[in-house]
Image (cartoon, rainbow, N blue to C red; front, side):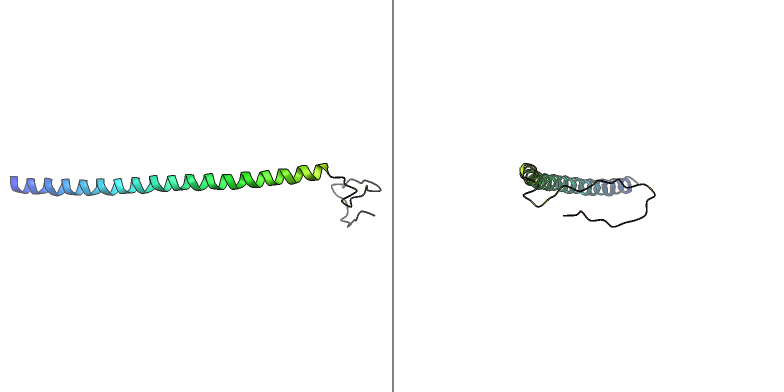
Length: 94
């Protein structure tokens, strides 16, 4: 009887140790994945910041430009679209 109990305890201990090792490997894998994902998100954030800087530089250059030098003209009249109006196609006169 004690021999069966001892062998059962040995198998249970080996099984629990195997489960512990599997959980440990899983935790290390997910921790490394989270670290890699954080690095990628920082890289993407830097890309977005660069694009925003480029956009704001272009927008500030346009806001300083003379619209008539770029070919824009003042409209002859300004009309507002009604909610139930008929569909029309309009074009600004030059």
